Image (cartoon, rainbow, N blue to C red; front, side, top):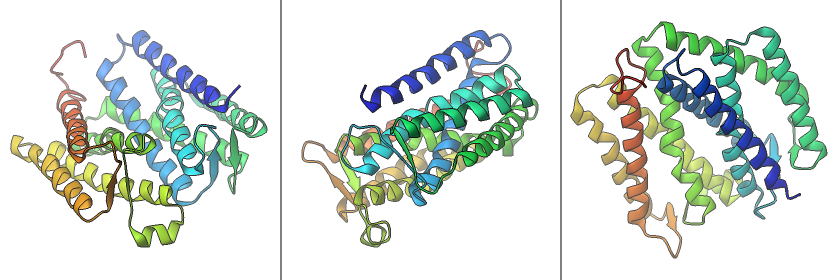
Length: 289
């Protein structure tokens, strides 16, 4: 069986279990709260993966689809960190599963880690199995605490930080997909010299940029409440990407148009603003949600 099918199976399990959990718990929690929590966990996971995998080369995903190692890493990251890991956190908080279950999940994920290494669909560099167990325990405890804060204390700070993780997920999503489709990539000579691989360099450049853009979007929507502030993220995205394009920091594929990139990025900013305006509020725009 090709490696990618195992990744797809794990991702499918994560997505199906998330949908089932949201459906079963729709009378206990607002659907929008569960969805936002899922997205926030995915965004936090993306940040952690960027640090551990992207910057420090801790392991390798062997999806078997691309020749370049970092293309494989990016695909494996997108599948698992947007499905299986946030799904696990969602299940734990929705069903109020505590310490014994957290220990069980840590053991389960460590076993999956071991089996994936043995099956050669995943490779450790400096990463060790105990790190998987410790990471799972720490992250699940933190996410349980954070979900309680979201439920009990809708403070401006809690809401703003939560939506920063959501913004990372939504605003950055088009970039890795466009790179995997060979529509565009980014290059800066000093980054390439530092990290050697041009594909990894492209990932690092655009993730750093989107981390800043996500922060600006959150400030303009969560902190500055006037409607006109929400226009700033769109303008910054258009101006920044235009500069990247004109200075050859962004390189466009032969069958792609730069305008498509602008439209897609602005569409995802609009999606984030819609989510922010209509969720984690005492009275949602849509009562059922």
